[in-house]
Image (cartoon, rainbow, N blue to C red; front, side):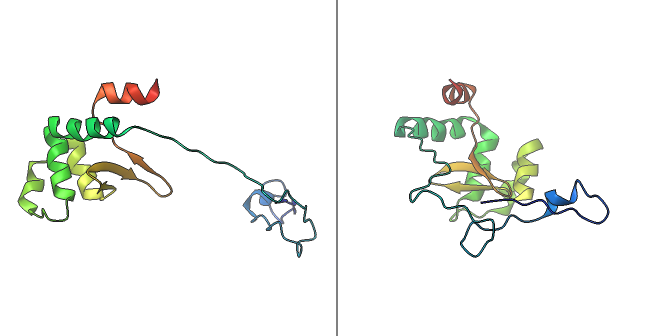
Length: 128
């Protein structure tokens, strides 16, 4: 993909940053042929099932997290249970930014979804 700077009317230097890049196709005058099997980035991670089992167990040890997970289960809809949540767990439930997949809690933002960990030893396992 080639990005061509075109100066704007008001902010001649900054305006080029707000323009969309043109697709790198033969119709584009700035087209540059690429390798047939061009890979821009790939990330593969393998984490054993033992780690995921420890994550699920850690959710049961944290009372607020356990309630939070129960609220997110499809078959478990008791609105009164949400009254037992306090602090950041209550706020997280109200924002609806978490979901439960295979009994693992994930936090999602606009373009990312990350696993939620509550146990410090599991966090250290991932980091080291």
